Figure: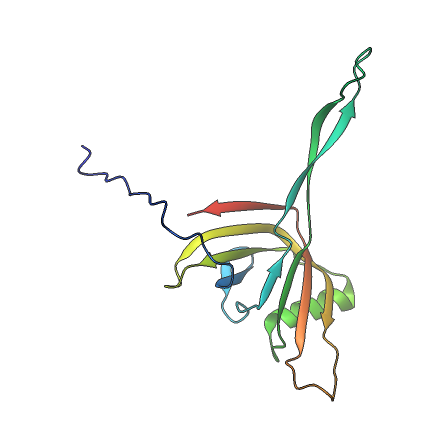
Length: 160
């Protein structure tokens, strides 16, 4: 039976993944990927924290019990060179202009050198909080950067 299900070999010489090869996918209606808005130069905010409450036990002065209460998340921040005619920009503009939101899902995938995902994170019910454009400066020849900040209800690590 072991011949049918080979166990992959683990190597301690295998280098850990690098963080410069990744892809961001916005899921239209929660399922279909938006293939036009996938390239970003920076992603931050992949963080979850468990909040706790302290309970002091009567007569015990050396420590307090810390009990978990809820999970909180940082905002997901995406940066990229400005894309003219982007569907994502239209969606952000609509949300910022009307305060009407269509929460969606976002997947951030860490890729290896062959463009194969090695790890992914699913952000659920995302919606825009902030949208900013880098400074316009006639003294520099730099790319204009869009920064998009998203709130979300939950994220899950999807190890591959």
